[in-house]
Image (cartoon, rainbow over all chains, first blue to last red; front, side):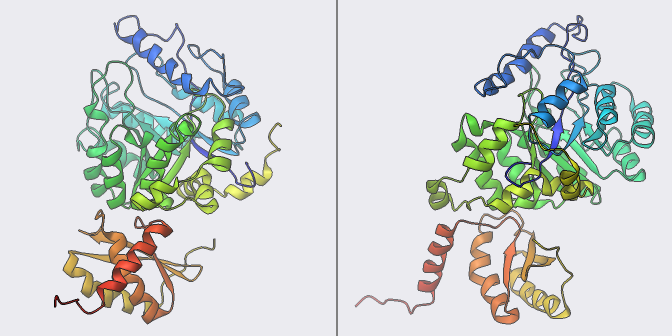
Length: 335
Length: 103
């Protein structure tokens, strides 16, 4: 909680970027890992986030310390990331996220993940069932833009069996990494355009576009503005408040104006960018839509109520969680 | 913020009438509920991603809902700054003035 606002982080990861998981059969693997580690550069200016090692297998306790002990966060979702292109045990392994949810059940929700090409559709569906019914997955994270084996989110043969299984088992929030390419992969499969047909064909499911699909931001705004079941997660990019607040003002202003505050979600991407604390402080205490953007583009000023919805209210509503009760039950964050 | 409540029959009637006008835009509005005395609407059809949503809100929807239901209204994804609202109101006010004919 920060300044009375409860925080529900929609995306944290227990990463594995260790040497042991780095694929030795993929020539671009080390380049991609270096790219991922470099994403931490933006946070190194923040006291407390400097100098830690990322190219390793994180433990749930380390991520918990960054997010909950130091990070002003009340609830978070630990998300699997099925990026197998460069890591044998995936970028954020299923088991590591599950272990974190098991270790901190009052603070962490487990988000599973599968890949229908790597695993094959029948096995991916089987794994989904295990993750939801036996491991308690509350949502599912998918990644379709691989360097080999990419697939479309609107492919009835590949993607739809996953959605149907989620729907059958009562999981109605499907999340996609979009935009934000790593290493030397192709960008086009990370466009959010292929979520339109999926959202149309599955109106009872909610789809989350992570990273606002930047550099496909304009497409994301247009799609989320038209489809009631598509949400925008500002995962890892509100963090730019410290580096480029005007850029965040342009993104946030346009989202508030054209998509609506009820569909914007906070995600820290911890532990990759360090503890969320400095980003939360910058967003809550200092961030506003600059006057020239309000006058010149008509972007609305961001309010305290907006920040409450973005930082947790919206994701709590999507996940059916009583955030106020959860926040009241948590011990105070470390000073 | 209180939870949204279901619209009354009067609200539904007003929206149905409003939609007769909005069909000329190729779109319509649907009701998301009433929250803290404010009617929450979502635009559909061709209006859904139209950049002129705020104009339709200020020129047509808000005046009509205020007159008919005596409540304020918001449109999801059509929120603009106070500066832009003031500019729109000024422009819309002058649009009702009689045309100035050249002498």
